[in-house]
Length: 548
Image (cartoon, rainbow, N blue to C red; front, side):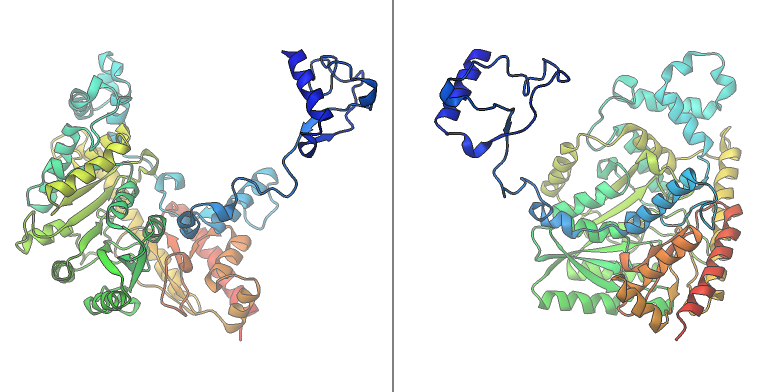
């Protein structure tokens, strides 16, 4: 074989047929080179005739000069390039670099830790998981524990009973097995029962698709609804960047409707009508309306009457209603109550076939904060059999959502009840988390409103505040010179000075000419005073530096 290769190379070089592709390098064989180096050890090659007796170096087959690489950024899918996700954008990369610097060189900054207020990731910021949920998960993941005598003293009786019930519903009684593409049937039955208990109206397990968090459900709906850039989706501004990103990724058009900051981020039907009509005049076919309730990043909770108006609007205009309800347990205002859009639809007399509605829920938010477990579901109603088959086809392409997330979704919708052994501990943990979140929201809201040029609406629910900041003209000019949006300029300066991470309002959308940032209420209560102190000191210095 070596002789054949050598003879073939000699003939090609003699005929100059590979001259454009061969360069003769200067890597001569030396005693320091291993004889196994097949490039530079030429003992396997035949001696060349005297006519070709030039110093033979190693063969290096090179691409033609000037040839373009097979993949460039410009050659990627333009829809991928178009989509953005600010919550994990540039400012988080800067924060991670600062965190690495602090770990390598403690005391090298004016602050001793990074305080992440950029993302709704409760357990990363110290929140403890709910004991009952984790006990059930542990027993389902390691069923042999159920055969040990010690288990009865280590785990509550109701967590053992729930784990046994779930294991009997699972293929192979194993969390490592695939399930039905919509999710394990018994778990969907449990979720449907939980929805029915919440709303007071029937729920069908066949309407439920278990997903890896709410995000895959949103992507599935965009994939189903968007046919081209001529199709639009009405989304609130400010909005959670998942929606603008998924619309861009699937090639659709984001149709913005603006929430009214002056009325506590109110959703006005007149604004919906205005934006819908303007889009239709441009030739856009608007397919659906996204409503986030409670709001992200704005924290408002919709009144039931407002929800009724929204349902009527969707019914009249022939729109699919996409209801993001992942913060349904996070209600802090005593005069506010969460009502699901499904409950509102049924209370108005609309049945299963009257209005297309998709409701999203997640185990990542609420009081449970199980972001890493990736559990959630969407409840799909108002679609005919042929369309439902397409839902199932898309779900089948992904085989199934992860089993731990499926189990958690069932536990969230059917937690311990009065009389269960775990109930008192469960209630104490849940109540403690929600009351603490309410206190944190109030403390941060008050702190923001004390800052010069800053106004902040009340957080009625969810996990965020979205204060508005009036920036001096000099600061805006400095931001332009730095090629940054003014709120991004402020947020990066805040991070580099204090270690506090917030997300510029630009990433969520805002009325042109206004500037905001989103701040979570998730750092533990003992960290909140440090956030307030650092932010207050920074803001005073910033305003003095750029004062007009």
